[in-house]
Amino acid sequence: MKIDPNYPTLRESNIGGLELIKRGKVRDVYRFDEGRLFFVTTDRISTHDVVYKDCIPHKGFGLTQTTIYAFNNTEDIVENHFLKSPDPNAMVVLETEQYPVEVIVRGILTGSAWRAYQKDGEVCGIKLPKGMKKNQKLDKPIITPSTKAETGHDVNITGSRARELVGSVWDEIEKVAIELFERGDYLASKQGGMLADTKFEFGKRGKYDLILTDEALTHDSSRYLNIEDWKTSFEGETEPDWIDKQLVRNYSEDLGFTGDGEPPILPEQIITGAAIRVLEVYHLLSGEELELPEEPPTNRRIARNLRKVVVKS
Image (cartoon, rainbow, N blue to C red; front, side, top):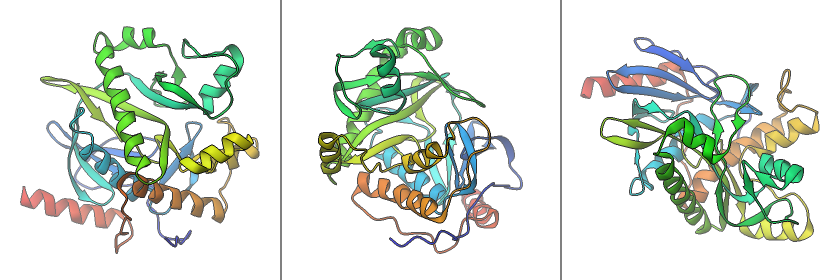
């Protein structure tokens, strides 16, 4: 798919008539009505918990569509908060009481987990075998939780600390998170891919003690690889071509940015590469190509599509 790095992007949404609750790193969250929220996924990108000045074309669209696909293909495992999508960049979702923990499931020893392992041979209190190598596949997926930070950096915690924060439901969260990871890995494997790691968020509402929220199996929340590329790179001890936003992380880290200060300005080739990977993740999960919207993402388009839904309902 040919990507125009200068395609109009949505940096920030402003939807009249709705109460803005918060602007996250990528999503703007509005009050839709009693018990429901309106998520607008912008084209902002972040690494190291910092939002860049540059935007990525089609990113909000790709994340929204990937999340909807993931929700629809995992609802047999756990309930999720998705209700409907009035616009290619937006979702109406159930409002939930969020559990204060991000649940990261890892199938490969990479990223912050690899750095932690190098220090003392364990990750979030989980002792791993000696002599493991970077990007080595784990015998079975592990869960490495972290606390959610509105600003600044998330903090890795142990499973026992996570249980203290959320209560006995943590046992069910662990079970469901592993099943969700395995489903994502299975879907990717049908297109020759593999899921290296991913992050889930959960909440509760009414009779449901566990609801999958936020996003799922996206370019932002996950790391993917081509299986053959992973095998070749691991055997040759080289870095694989990650199908996620690792491209942006690597570029920034090469310039010395690790989360402190202002992030660098992204050149066209990095912006284009990031956009391609957003859409590639959808293909990796679904086996289908996303058809781009005819109209760029704007506040006017989103508001117009939202009005149609409100009138119908």
